[in-house]
Length: 190
Image: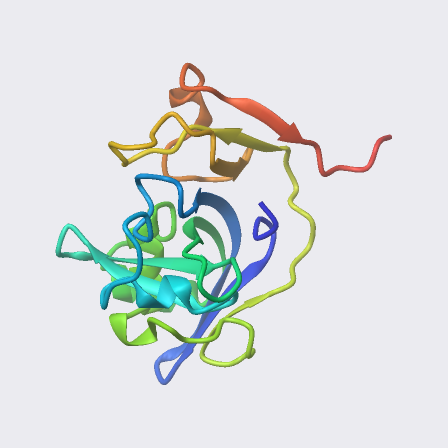
């Protein structure tokens, strides 16, 4: 939840791309959908490396997905960054994706748009260089939680967070029957 509104920045030799994080999903070690559920392995060792590391893996053999490790060293837990509102480098994102639309509304799409490769697994997202997360303005819309999507185990857990009104991977109108909850309103009262 704390990542919503932050800016994800990718600096590569091709150029800089960035976007505001508008959708995330949480994965904890007791969660059967978490890669850390069965303990450390060569594939998931980054999950146990400590907060602020990028956990990048290949999903279905074709999509690179970016997570931010969020617990202390030895505890396998991360947040999947699912969607961004593009800020900078949109022409480069379009070239990388080969299309003008749907650049960052989905975890595979945003990784492709930002040029996130498997070589960034274990990269420190707090250093402010290469691939990093920077503070951003408070989200413009209300933050809500719902059940996660794209998982077969632990799907009932309401650990997907998104900013209403932003372009996300699966719009809220399609998830209203799946446990949409008001998390909190980040706007100041009038």
